[in-house]
Image (tube, rainbow, N blue to C red):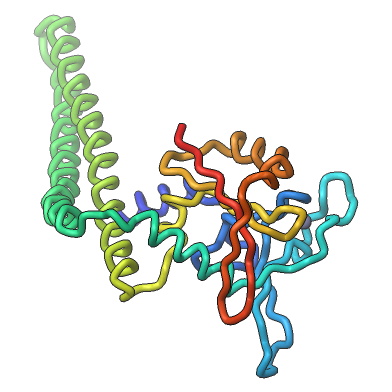
Length: 265
Ligand SMILES: [Zn+2]
């Protein structure tokens, strides 16, 4: 049941860009602001000592809606971009209280027991449904007024509805707890340098990374979820953000310039 819920939740959060050839922590968040297509990882000079991974919007087969080519021809260095996102993510979580997180992990574990309760409640529903069936056969044979049976029938039906409701509430809360336990575990490991950055961790702090026409990045940071509509509005007005202060990140002589757009509400 938990696996099904996890699958369902993932499908709901699934970004159509995730599977476009780029796995890993940057999946589904880096877009070209000029043509709107997701940036994809491309390996250049493959097999040579100077092999490099780059980010480009050209690799995808999805054409621009107006059929024209994207005006931006430059590519971005993948490793430098990933390193930058990793640092920004770490900084965002720098003030985290590890002890507090560990406490919530412990507390969450007991809440996961909620799933056992669901099985219990489902068994109860089966019992109630059997009760309904025998009530129906009893009513057809008995001389007791039908009205009496009708009342009993309605009352059991309401009980079943109430149990189903309870199950739904547990499913929702139980899932959230399970989800946040795993997230916190991943986050702690990442902050302690024991685990690589995941797309899940990035997504909590960085909602989009747009490649602007000067091949710099506009990093949209926010702790709150941003709607697809809002993100599209930002993309459409992306050139306005060229006025934000430009910063430079360097990794092994590879440079990425970027701007940060922080959204608080
Ligand atoms: Zn493009």
